[in-house]
Picture 1 (spheres, rainbow, N blue to C red):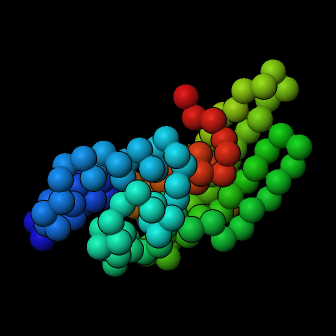
Picture 2 (cartoon, rainbow, N blue to C red; picture 1 turned 45 degrees about the vertical axis):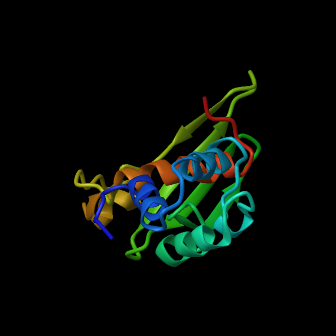
Length: 149
């Protein structure tokens, strides 16, 4: 299989490698972004061979970030995610009384500023996140019923 950089590029390549029609990739992205299906096995519109290939490449979940800690309050949802390499990042979902939501997501593991009051800064800078790791934080919120617009 030809190497591609993004998860969605890899998905498209898998469809091509299996010699499936191009509309299968469109069905796949619609299942993710319109039907909010976050588990490849639950995408029953896709042929089993494609679902199995996706699970083999990515695991069961569309999102590569794994929530390992969740803290809820009235207006805030704080998450600690673990990445494929074991690094951990935080994301926040914020609900406002006016009815809208906002999300704070990570773009890096650690931080190079080293502020004394911040646990993330005390760990130091580790690396920048990939585009997939950044967008997968938003997918977590989306798959769990939050509105992204």
